[in-house]
Length: 201
Image 1 (tube, rainbow, N blue to C red):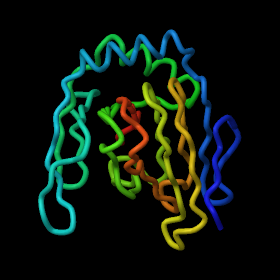
Image 2 (spheres, rainbow, N blue to C red; image 1 turned 45 degrees about the vertical axis):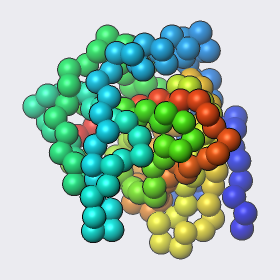
Image 3 (tube, helix red, strand yellow; image 1 turned 120 degrees about the vertical axis):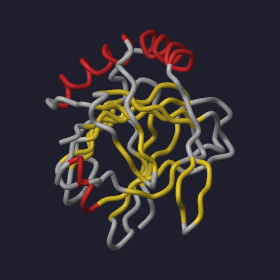
C-alpha cells in the first residue's frame, strides 16, 4: 500500500492500535511566527552525540531539554538534565496541556536547520514515559513530512505534512505498536522547530 497524506484532518489517523490526532492550525500564524523567532534565539541548543549501530555519531539536528530539573531524561545513550522552563515554553505548554488533557513534565526541543537534518525510525517508549504515554508534538517553521508505520509489519506507511503552528497528539497504544521518523528532504531549505511534550512518571 502506498503512503497517504493527511494535511488537514483532526480525527484519528491510525487505522488500528493507537491514536494520532492532527490539528494543522493549533497556533494561528502570527503567534506561530512569534514563537519560531523567539525559540530559535532563546533556547540553549546543542548537538549531542548518540549511539547508532555500535558507533557514536552526532545527531543530525540541534536539541534542548526543558522541564523538571529533578527528573533527567535519556534516549539513545544520551542523558539530559532539563533546563528551567522559559516564559515562551510555559505559554505553549499551557495551551497544549489543555488540548491533550495531560499534565506534561518535560519538553524535548528539536531544531532542524534545513532538510538535511532529520530523525530516524523510533518509538517514544522509554520506561520513564509509562506504558501508553501521550506525546504532544508542536511544529513551528518549515513544513516537513512526518512518517509513521506499524513497528511489526512496517506497512502501511502514513505520511503527515506537519504545518507551521500545528499540533500532533500521539496517545493510547501508538508508541507500542507504531514507529515514526522525520526523513531528510532536498526540497526544504528553511528551519523547523519541533517541541515534543511528554510526562515522566
